Length: 195
Image (cartoon, rainbow, N blue to C red; front, side):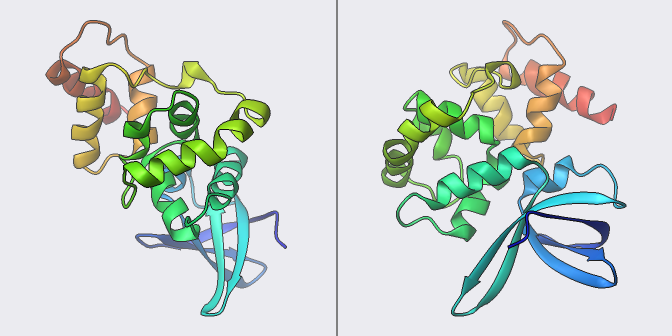
C-alpha cells in the first residue's frame, strides 16, 4: 500500500517512531538497526510494510530497501510473523542473515531473540534458494563470523546496548587481524566514541 514515507521524525520510542508527513503522524514500528542508521530527524525516508491483522493495522518501517527486502523474505518462513522478523533485524543486519543462510550457520541466526536451533534451521531451509538466486551477498560489509574473538567481542558490545550494524561499521574501519577479544572491544569502543 505504501512504498515509503518521507517526513520528519517527531518521536522515537523503544520499538517505534512517529513520522509526520503533511500534518499526519504515522506510528511506524522499526528495528534497532534502522534506528541506528537514521542520521537526522528531518526529511527522513522510511520504507514501509503495511500489515493488517484482526487486532489492528500496523506499519513497519526500514531505513534501507535492503532491510525491507529481508523482512519480507523472513515473513515467507513458516511461523515467523512481523514481530519475530523485526526482532531478528534488530540484532542482525541483512548481510549477517544472508551469510548465515548461505553458510548454513545456525549460530548466527540464534543470536536473535526467540530464535532457537529449530527456527534457525527452518529459516536456512526455506530461504536458501531465494538468497542464492535473488540476493548478492556483500562479504566486504561483514567481518567473518567464524573468528571466535570477533564473535565474542560483538556479543560483549551488544551487551553494552550497541547494535550489530554500529559494531560492524566500527569494525570495518580498523584492522583486527590477530587481535584478542579484549583488544577488539577496546579498539571498537574507541572507534565508536569518535562518531
